[in-house]
Length: 321
Image 1 (spheres, rainbow, N blue to C red):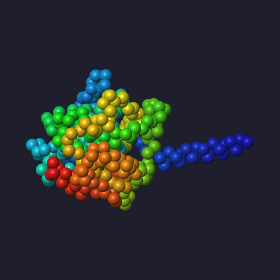
Image 2: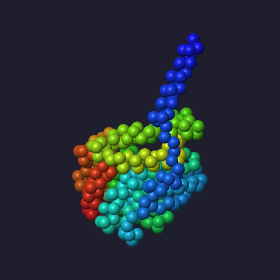
Image 3: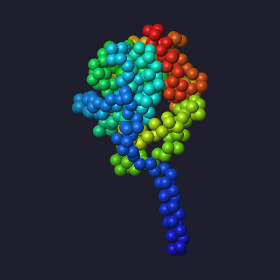
Image 4: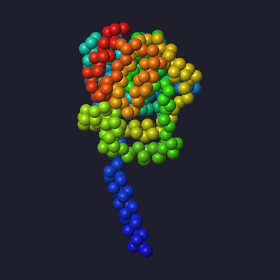
């Protein structure tokens, strides 16, 4: 009997050890990650916004600033688990077209920090955008974003209509999609600290492939960027611990309908993360003419990353307003 018990213990220990070897990937030092992914256009700033209760909240934000400061400004925002780097090819082309381009890492993502109270919302991210452009003495922007960044963009456009020249949405989260909640157990410091360390590269790669219309278009350099930045100190733990803030009474769809600035919607028809129904929702709800939207049959959730030449359609939109 003791021999069988000993064998069971050995097998269980071996399985646990194997699991750890396969899945355990510890955090990387923030300094190391920044040494790899801060660019010649990068800046870091501590910004302050207000909570719903009126208390001051500080956060460290990374952004890139490209182009002549005197030119019209475009601010582009990435999606969840991504970073400002996803828009860098677009930004370089837009600078050539005569724009100043700001690329911002959202709170909890990229090279930006997190709120100490582990709370997030479109409102908070929108306030960070506002704090950043105020810091840069910018009064008017063309704003746009992908996925979560799209939602932050339409929220900002509704909250600060006087600061908006135009709005561009790429596979954006629509108003009717609810935020996903994480089990309270996973949010506890001990559990989130432990669980967050088990994200091997091959797992992230398989997830990222689903964001592309053509998985073969996802190169190893892009995977490395996503993966390395995700492993920045406490990033994964902070994402697990995040809680959604109660939003103000002004409803999401009402916010979308209140936007008076020109709007352009871009979508990948092979998007398996936010389906084409959301694209049609934006078109019908906003009553957009055919010149104000486009979809790409072969692209997925991140068309601007999968095929950077899609920026040409955005430039046509900008030239027509």
